[in-house]
Each structure stands twice: as structure tokens, then as C-alpha cells.
Amino acid sequence: MNIYIGSQELDLFKYLDDKQTQAMLKLCKSMEVPAREYVVQIGVELDCFVILEQGELEILDAKGKKIGSIYPGEIAGETCFIEPSPPLFSLRSLRDSSVLMIDFNEVKTSMDADAELAARIQAAINDSLCLKIIRITHDGDNHA
Image (cartoon, rainbow, N blue to C red; front, side):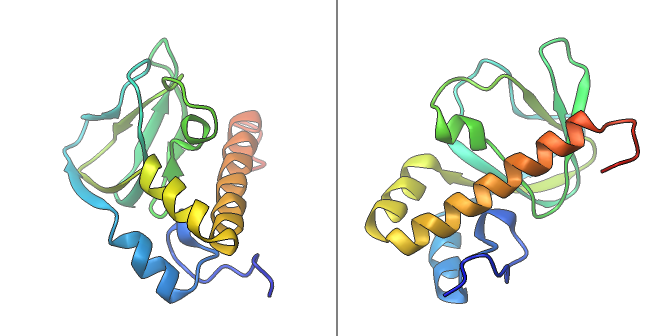
């Protein structure tokens, strides 16, 4: 089975089948975020993935400078999942937004119980990190 065939709209679940996606969605909590509100603040422990459903989130560095964006379907928090530590970024909504949050421990428990699911989620996390690196390194170059 090819785990790299994306079939879902949400990046974290893009390589999961419908049954796996539904099981993971049951673990998510939904949150409405008003414009200009912080979803994640730099240095404050992050214990969940943030999945943007609607709206747009900006990624801010320690000085408050915008270094990237999160668009619908995309995720944030991958580095904190891989290496538990407070985030080196903040996330702020640019306009009223809707996010899903899924606890890292819930994801880890699901991954520990199913090696195929673990491989699919890890592949999605890797893709997400690569996309962010490309966007940040090519910002202003019109490459991404």
C-alpha cells in the first residue's frame, strides 16, 4: 500500500483513509479564534497540533515579525511534537478563524497502537515541515 497518496483535506490526516481520519477527528477540539487573537504564544508550552479549518494564521518570530502563514487545512506545532519544548514562534489569527486542536498525547497513543497510522502521520508531519521551510527560505523570491 502506498502511504503517500493524499486523500484528505487536512494536512495532518492527508495520508489516512476515511476510517482513520474519522477516528482522529473524534479526538479534536474545535475553537473559534477572533481576528488578531493569539492561538500559540512563543515560549508557552504547546501540547497539541493546531489545524486551521477556516481563516488565516500568521507565524511570528520572537520580535513579532511575520515569518510565515498557515492556510486552511495546514497544521502547526510539528516541531513541538517531535522535540517537546516551548515553541519558538507565535500564531495569531489575521481574521476570524476556526481551528481544530488535537493533543500530542492522543496522537502518540494512536500512533503507538498502529504502525501504519504512525507512518502515515509522520509522513504528513514531514511534508508540513518541508513546506514551511520552503516558504520561509524562499519568501520574497516568488518561488513558493
